[in-house]
Length: 203
Length: 264
Image (cartoon, rainbow over all chains, first blue to last red; front, side):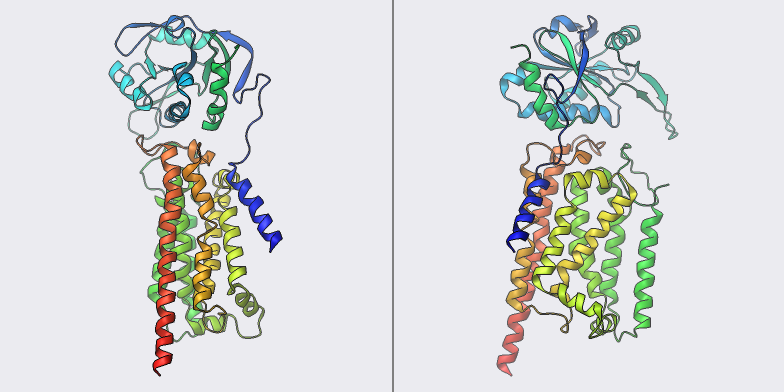
């Protein structure tokens, strides 16, 4: 019976631990650390009020999580944003204040400013939704070395379309340098591990 | 074509999908039950119990519940677990009459010895709890539910776990060794271990299951965290209820039986 109890305890303990966690990068992140860090792209987008939003200026000194996606996205975008929102909600105030989540739409045709604003703020009122012209959008994606988003017709006969886009969130540390990428599949506990490190980077 | 519901990672759709494996299973189960009754010349056919188990199994495994539970919502996955272990399995056990069990496992047979062994409290509890814990490991769920075979194995494990759980309570007189208080203690014991994964789901800072955390959302208003917390609450609150009811029934029947003996 003692052996059985011990075995049960071990098994339950393991089962409740939530399983395995990924390996740390050399910098101590669970995200994919870039071997060659990249500067924050210097582009001017349009914010939800229709005002110009120069990324470099507006996010200076902040950890910036940059993500290109679209509001009609049925899987990746809402999951990524919901997970970041859920984790930020549980972070201490000083971490929350120092993280800016920037979502740039790759589907400006459907994502009008009000639509984009409502959708993004549905995850977290502090999240920023941005639009840009096709040329700026293409240039911004190229600068951060992401493949360009492409429109794809849906096969369900609805006449709608999907937008193929990079599923990666790029994290810029407060010094304005992109150091870590978070592909789709990044879990909340990974974000919870990395966000304080990104905020405290270089301190 | 998918034979069995499993996680695909595709966006959720309310469009009906056919899962031939599920339909084949319920068809074979119905046929098997009918043929068994005919071959063993059952004196009574507990048709109502069979229909409860059969329909319950069908609804639990087929679209939309099967698909939602396999790849989208942990709360529905938990409902499936509860339905299989607390409704389908006991109903199917009751769908075989006492004389049917006598013919399935005649005295002196190996089947009889096995069924008598698992009619005891400890083997029944251990087998049930091992299956419950094993099928709720995050790493098992995250891996198994992405394949049709793995998902099928989980569903089948729950059915078997339910049979282990209820056999000591429902087995005919020739198999049973537990008294009234033994059965009550046994049922109480069955509620203890599932509390741990249930509480982990409710109180864990981060979602326990990768599969459901990263699954495409069924509704934007229902987050993965809410879903997994609801799954934990469902497992504990909804899951314990039938067991407490069964405990009350065992107690009531036991006291009624003793009162009858005293009066006579």
